[in-house]
Amino acid sequence: MNRADFRTGLRSWLDANDLSAGPDHSLDAQVEQLARVRRALFDADWMRYGWPAEVGGLGGPAVLRAILGEEVATRDLAEPGIYSMIEVLAPTMISYASPQLAAEMVPRLLSGREQWCQGFSEPGSGSDLASLSTKAEQRGDHWVITGQKVWTSLAQYAARCVLLTRTGIGHDGITAFFVDMDSPGITVRPLRTMHGIDEFAEVYFDEVVVPADRMLGRPGDGWRIAMDLLPHERSTCFWHRIAYLYRRFDQLLEQTAHDDRAGHDDAELGAVHLALHTIRCRSLATQERLAAGGKLGPETSVDKVLLATAEQHLFDTVRDLLPGVIELADSPWRAEYLYSRAATIYGGTAEIQRNIIARRLLDLGKE
Ligand SMILES: Cc1cc2nc3c(=O)[nH]c(=O)nc-3n(C[C@H](O)[C@H](O)[C@H](O)COP(=O)(O)OP(=O)(O)OC[C@H]3O[C@@H](n4cnc5c(N)ncnc54)[C@H](O)[C@@H]3O)c2cc1C
Image (cartoon, rainbow, N blue to C red):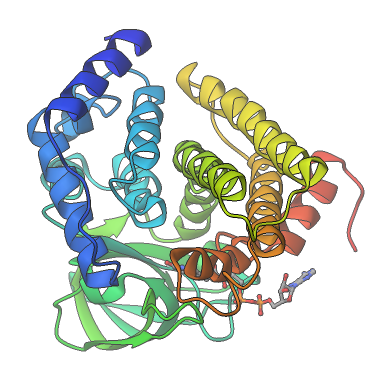
């Protein structure tokens, strides 16, 4: 199906099938709503376009997934952060899990029957991911995993985890596994964020037994898998997030136009619009490269810097033009403003992105 037909068909299907979220903004409600939206879109086939037939997809370019996410975000059907988890984890499974495992598991994620999580960061290993120490030891045809992860988004809802472990020394001593979260020895402790939602968790692994066929790639492939996965955090799912930011920008314009107490600063609003437009243009080029079969790499760090900058600029302007809405009111703006602070942390901090741009794109050498 071509893009225009896909978008037109999808829009009329969404007009005819009301998937609107309810008034409850708790994380439980958001996760439930996400599962409902995914299930309905999968059953009606929209969620299957852009994914290969081997994992239950209907083929076509990944850009169809970007269009789907854009429509979902524009209609506020699902929170874009948790919606986009598929875009990060499913491509990794397709590239590195055995074909049988990918065929069995990926449809569960696409259809909303399961939520998965990504176990990379540890208390001592965030930006310096290669220093991770969660250990995996081979015992016969099993591996036994012991250690701790942290900031694992949605771990308390996840049925599976794409997990990085240490099996040897250095970058070549990192190995990835696809772990069932109900395995004996796993403890999940949710952490409260400053916007009042238990979005992520500490996850403890105490002698967790994982079958050898749950390894992703081969022993020592973990670093390569992480380097392939991270650009996916900055591609299709950014398109969804940009659509969500445009929607919030429109709401800001509406509120400033109708609320007598609101400030008016056309130059500032223009600057936010320019920042959003800039990242949209940049991300469009990334979507086109992906659609043409290109591989994503360090250049997606530019997308990440532009997106985080635009997002924080937008919510800073909300704070400046809607007096008290962040500081005094318990409004959705407040939660979104606070969450926008994390945009320069998750998926690699702003400083790390700039290091990547300096070293790998501009060839400026080490610090
Ligand atoms: C909302 C949210 C969701 C997340 N979800 C997940 C998840 O699902 N799974 C997961 O594995 N992780 C997740 N993370 C963790 C995220 O990947 C890490 O927070 C991030 O990589 C930074 O690591 P850190 O927190 O350990 O900070 P640190 O690495 O300790 O960095 C602290 C500060 O030092 C700076 N810094 C560090 N090294 C350098 C350097 N070499 N040069 C310049 N500055 C440097 C950093 O930029 C930062 O400002 C999530 C984080 C957030 C905020």
